[in-house]
Image (cartoon, rainbow, N blue to C red; front, side, top):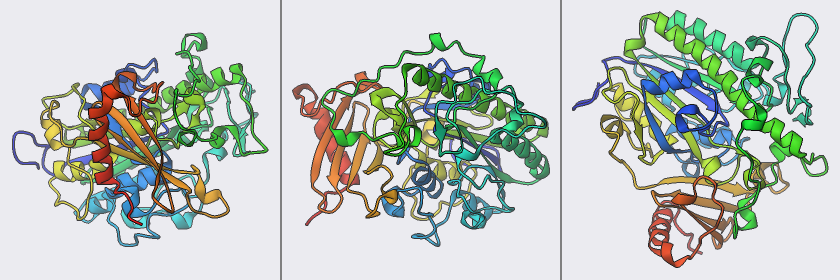
Length: 473
């Protein structure tokens, strides 16, 4: 229990929910997504409007969030390095709860979805994880009898396994997230009688864009927001990437037509609503369990996403659309249910926040800040900036030399986003970017060195270099 004017009930449970590749395209963030279950969660939560990931790709972001340590501290900047390889004894968020008497369970994708059973993190959990040991490209529909026709174009292949776009009239459980929801409901029934930390990780809206047909039918494609694919004026080439996750590898790339781009954007929203419906099943089960009044619910995406903006598809940039994430924290008995906060926050703040709310001792070395002061007063702030970074090449571990050529270090203040791209070997700054708050999240013009923003640029640069010191050669 937290001392002071704001406290959660003693021995509080935690329901820790994650979505994959979800930018803040939710109804409560002003987007046209149809998300009734996230809407009802927001009505009992504090909504963080300026929450940011530490790196916009799955493994570094999740490893950072779940250890409370930044990617540079973990030395994890790619999807192929298990966080325990360079950090064998690091304490994770669920392990911290397990060590203090909680039954910790994992259903779905919480840590990165390692492709083999030898690469989970059994140490963090009280029972074996419920995982899908494969990539997203293997989430093919499982149905009894003949498979209904695909009513989407198919739009190429994702990881050469499943169509990039797929619209089939199948039940929710045909795809992996439906089975995640069913297992989460089952596990909740099993553990509700003792203190628990239940982590439920949904795969959507990550591609493939293959939600069941009824979720595609929720949207009129012609009424979805129009795409502006233009790159930011003055943005350096290094700020961008080749979108290979969606468009394919060099030599095997698809060139999306306007029709396919519209279909992918439609499919992304369908995926959001599909995920939202699965979340609703878990929230309903919590309400039926009898322990909702002593269960904290957190919800966050692991990073944002591009749907053709800046000419980009997927994640792996430092732009606002990739760095910013949705985040909700619902604490039983809060006087601020339904409030929103503009406090700058980061995913690494979740570890110290949940520890404090549940009265656990602070884990050592955490680099995040507890958000309890913001939950007590949504007008409060706990930090002046949020930091995101990403290497180039975006997936450097798949390149012959297995090292980055450069690292982009980015800081978000209340007024601007400032980014420095630095040569990996020398540390020299090779490009810079500055985008002002009034131009967020579109970031249409790089305003670097613009006179009217010099004060904000100097402040941001000082914060950036304090977090990412310039290398002395």
